[in-house]
Image (tube, rainbow, N blue to C red):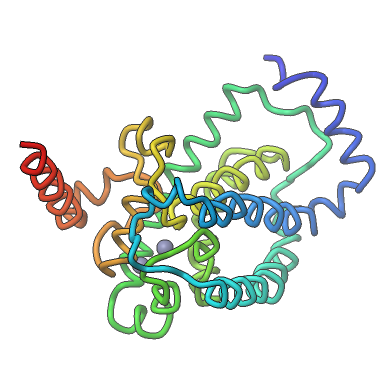
Amino acid sequence: MESITTGFEAYWFQFVDYWGEDFLLKYGTFFVHQIFYFAAYIPFFLCDFIPAFQKYKLQPTKRNDFKTQLNCLAKIFFTHVFVQLPMIIVFHPAIQMLGFRSRVPLPSLPNLIFVLAVSFLLEDFYFYWIHRLLHQGFWYKHIHKIHHDHSAPFGITAEYAHPIETLLLGVGTCLGPFLLTRDLFTLWSWLAIRLYQTVECHSGYDFPWNPTNFIPFWGGSHFHDFHHETFVGNYSSTFTYLDKLCGTSDKYYQRLTKRNENKEQKQK
Ligand SMILES: [Zn+2]
Ligand SMILES: [Zn+2]
């Protein structure tokens, strides 16, 4: 099977040769994480200055001022440098032991899509149960409460969390790539798409072009924003099926039904 594109593979090899495999395996993931996380947030941040987009705000009466966003940004940056970076360095021998490599042929597109899809399913399943546990007494009070500081979330609040929560949920992010691949390109592709998805979930905007409107069982910003607003239910990170099966999204769907009924009555 052909790799994604032969031309792109040549650029990838040039990139790997320039930085060196050891450096990329040890520190590259940290920088890639920084770039994708903040790049995913910038468009949503700019949306706040576009009046035409304000009708897509999920909680229009709650505004996050510049000071709140700056405060969140500072804390996130602190967590990234003093929690995530050491974590990446500590786990570097494990990455080496597992046999991760960067200078290997790029995956075929079907293979990449397969790994990404399975990674989403595994991460979502793991996230659901750990997140549900984090809403129990001790865990909520001492750990998860920090993530719920923002009842009307905005992009970068996605990783605004206690270091223990970062560690616990980070395991779920690693499950798919650790089980299914040994190439750094696939790992970074997964990281990029998962980071965009979690930033979108916390964006506070429900745009018509959001994946929720095209992918069945996809939660998205509307689904997760409800969790932040009400502090209960909708525990999944990506899909809606587990919450539906376990009855933890009933209140969310009751509200949707009520909202649709009100809309219909207004139109009559
Ligand atoms: Zn929560
Ligand atoms: Zn959240």
